[in-house]
Image (cartoon, rainbow, N blue to C red; front, side, top):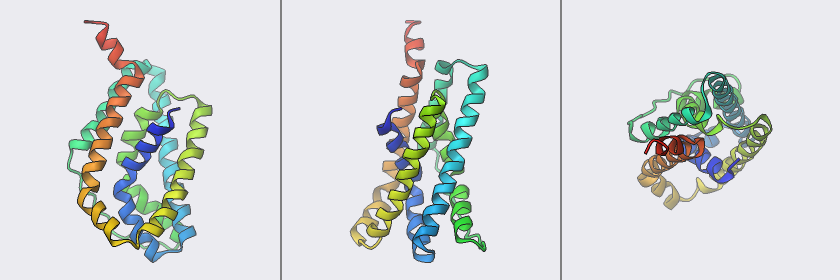
Length: 187
């Protein structure tokens, strides 16, 4: 598994949610935010992996490389997520549901092509790696949220950076799946 790609994928898919984390951290306990965010990420990763494996039963991996179009599409599709604050009794459940409502589509679209060719062992390592990144990000955002310059930069350039990352991920999926080499074989 390419950990640089996983890190880029995680950061780009969650970049918009980092702003939500700032608000959630002001509203809920840090540990509850960490657990809710972790549960949301794990749910979406497991779904992405399961759907990818189901597709592999019917299609070769190189053909599934065409799924790289999903992150590229998302980069150019204007998607302003509206998130109403769903009042839940549990802070953990509230964070998880907020995360799923904001990020489910993007996460499934982006992680599915990235995880489709991975073995179960690599997938388990991916869960541990992304889980660690999730917890680390909450701690970092808790510290960074207090710095006005950072908040202003993210507001100004965050969306453009996220779109560049999505395109790079899509191109990597084309290459890593073998789709490009299959297409080049025709020329």
